[in-house]
Amino acid sequence: MDAPATYLNWAFILISIPNLLMILGMILLFIVALVAPFPHGSEEPGAGEQRHE
Image (cartoon, rainbow, N blue to C red):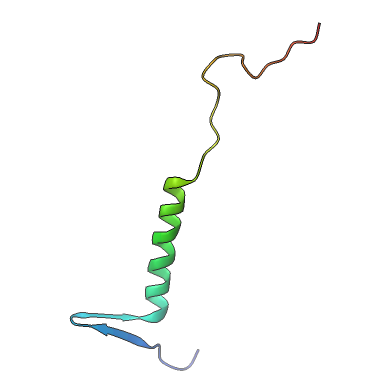
């Protein structure tokens, strides 16, 4: 923690490794949130109800 971070230098881009990892993690989480199947209700009202007579 006392040592300075390692930096990557691509032309005019200068970014530290920890910041780059955080950015990549947020992008990955965003992509997962876009493609993850979310639960949704049924289209037909009462489709989930079962009657026991």
